[in-house]
Length: 324
Image (cartoon, rainbow, N blue to C red; front, side, top):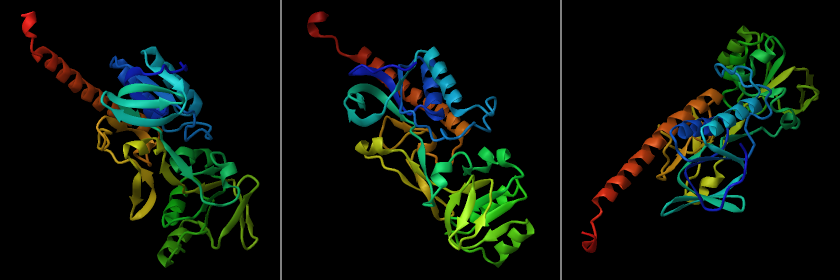
């Protein structure tokens, strides 16, 4: 349950971020009998969405309900979850000092699962409708707007690909080229063959539920809109450790930033692990939960090695001459 933190309290692992990745990692570590603290700022990426989809066994669960269940599960195994924001992480001789508001706690290891932010194109009206009638992922939202009028606002070279993909969910697709490259002859043929309308020129703004107003004055009624966001890792807390996000590319186009890490989530800083969208901007909720488990197992193995080294060193410690 939620509570406060005690100054200089010691944990095996402090998990920064209480989304699917962070809670999944915390659950596995708590079951491994580790002292775990989860610090959650309460700003999940999917907060505007009504439901989580493609999560086996939890299909259609509201995001807040899924996280509440996860917190309860972590707490049932002795893990602690507190509401707050980690403002700094610093390495010291005993591991890490993690500052949470005015207090600070110590951690032998740190698991960062802070997620990402979606940066929307600068089109008036998009942000106010984000997560409701403005969408980004067909697998997350396509079924809910099936057979309805869907518009895609192009902002990158993948606009045609996106329009053809969303055609799987509705026969009524309009591609607004906006700032994307103009479709070439072959792409036009493909779009025409699938009955996808193309509207050229810049988009001026969004009106009503999802209607698109062009700079030319044309108004195109739509039920839902799709935009490609820039996916930016929430990694400011790692800057003090020298960890900064790196660009993530798709076919040579930068689609966002993420913290680089190995397959077990280990970063370039020993003892600092990452899981979920902060290190994989394309990961979905169920994948982030899986990543949290994978990283937790590697992190626990790391702690076991340290525990064993300390135990061996203790046995080998010379006996003082006077104690013989």
